Length: 188
Image (cartoon, rainbow, N blue to C red; front, side, top):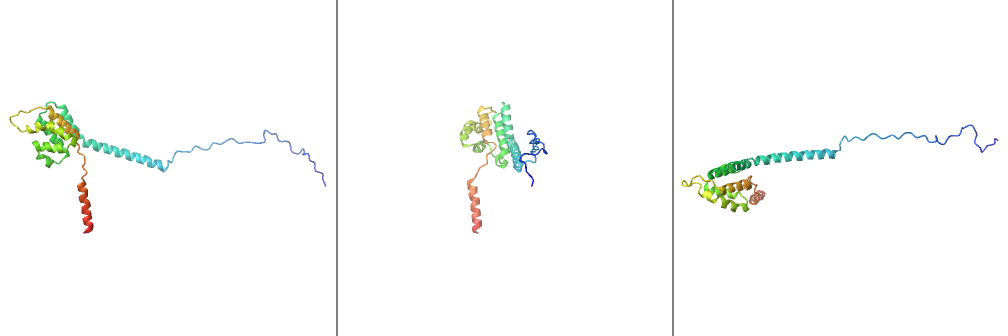
């Protein structure tokens, strides 16, 4: 048997402590790309584009609807020498663009004033009547020369500002009639 020595043999040279751990350089992972964008972002972009398009269409529609109103107000403001009959004709012209031509064409004098007054909000009706009453009464009197009255200008401005464009009326009776027709149709 051979004797085993407890001391290490000189066959293997001693390893220096500094080189004991050989480390490699740290590798940074590749930059994460922002593309392709997640589906949620595409939906958000599409929603924003739809909202912008809808807003532009709505603004154009409103501008087109208010075009005649603005034109009439401009004409009223820029022509200080307009006679009372010219102002009434301007009101009738503006009203014909928004309301039934067949209904308006046959109106004159007091009936025209009542029609115009009915298209105003309730709070403004009395003021319009007070400002325009005398002009509508004296409109067709031959003995009164063409007058220029500030009251009718104020009344016209009031009417053009508050009555145009007309607000859609929600008719509860019409809804009830439709519902009754549906119910009657089901019963029959």
